[in-house]
Image (cartoon, rainbow, N blue to C red; front, side):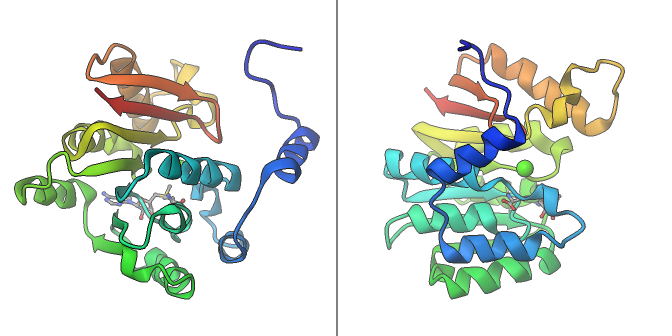
Length: 220
Ligand code: SAM
Ligand code: CA
């Protein structure tokens, strides 16, 4: 027995999936199709998707932000958890990756719930703020380019309501956050945001060793 987060061997990970994963058929197909993509590791894991769906249910989320869509797995899993009137504003720069996402959203019958905005996410989020959508979102998932993480966090904090949640992905960045000799721009950016969040009084905080590290920050 251990009172720290357990190390997952391949066998234990398989057990975890077998014991708990309830993946919709289309989500599984999307994961299988994305597996052959050279950037397949960008996709969230299925158990993380299920956790995010649980969060959406728990919060009774109706309006969410998705920052970094890729082939659409995280947006799809959240869309399936939203009520019929639920809406996601999804940001990405790639028409190519999101063409796959759109196809699956249509097949799953959730295309009407997802408003995809192609363009730099900082600009999309700034426009939402200018349009008066401050404090109107329940949940924001940050998973686009890591260099802009702080900019995404600050804007998400404006756009989510009090009691709303910001989930930030890849906060352990394959473990490289502890290698201080690693000065890659992405890891420096993630490390800086992690350090800032540690003492950020504007949020309640939890950093989970789920997937590649997932921070949950709840707006106070
Ligand atoms: N959440 C996705 C999933 O579950 O499959 C994975 C997202 S992937 C890690 C990151 C995405 O961010 C890519 O699709 C990329 O095109 C997008 N991206 C990169 N730079 C961006 C920017 N400046 N604004 C918006 N999206 C960006
Ligand atoms: Ca990610």
